[in-house]
Image (tube, rainbow, N blue to C red; front, side):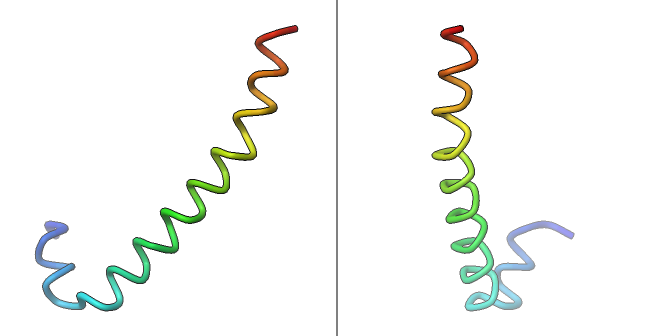
Length: 42
């Protein structure tokens, strides 16, 4: 199923899910970057 059709079918739910995923990704990246920096510096 193409993403466009899914977003058209349920715009509010899709955008809410997308925001949730974006927040999780952002949080995960912010957590991973310092650890990765420490490892690569050592």
